[in-house]
Image (cartoon, rainbow, N blue to C red; front, side):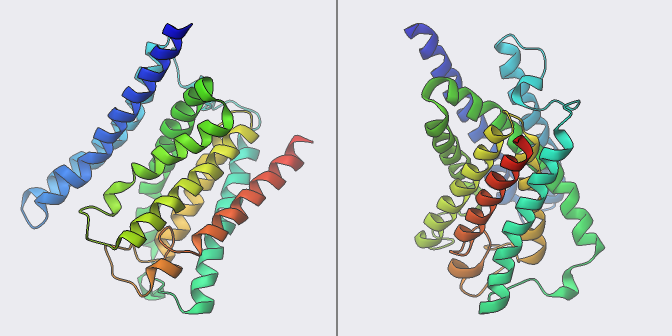
Length: 269
């Protein structure tokens, strides 16, 4: 029994280590090449390589465990409740993110100028966000959360996997000093809180990924279209209004959590 638990724990740690290496590709391989002729080529290669690795890693781990598909992780395409769960996620994520937008409008936060919001931006964001939401949820909720649950139970697994999820978003704030430590702490806590909402959505729909995927997609689409992508673009008072960096993200995610709880309760009646 102890041996089986140890193997599970080591497998989880190995998975986290591989995820760290994958998310390190952009900041440590691509970013140093900015301003050189190699930057566009290497950036494109790493972009597609990252998505491939985010797919092949959980697939390899479930194969290692004796499964032959990603279905057990909650990615059943033929699930009859898939459309309902996806819709709940899309609506909840959009309302959560638009609350943060509303706070920026009311209190004078920095939003992207409407003149910059065109079809190219929207289509580009869709192309990036669909695989990002799908593959990150597959890795962090589908594999990591489910396997941590086997070891430490649902509540602690939600917290633990959300902490890993937030810390592995480090590429936004390195090198250290590029943004203030206050912003680093706020950003990390905000992303962890988002992970908790996504984890709750995963369990509320019977260990399925469609609600978290929908929420993740809507949140990213609204956030990255309506806001400049701080810290790449300087903004005024990001610690208050900037999505994922500011204090208004906290009530935004709380609204999302309430939406998920209420809508899944109605669905499950």
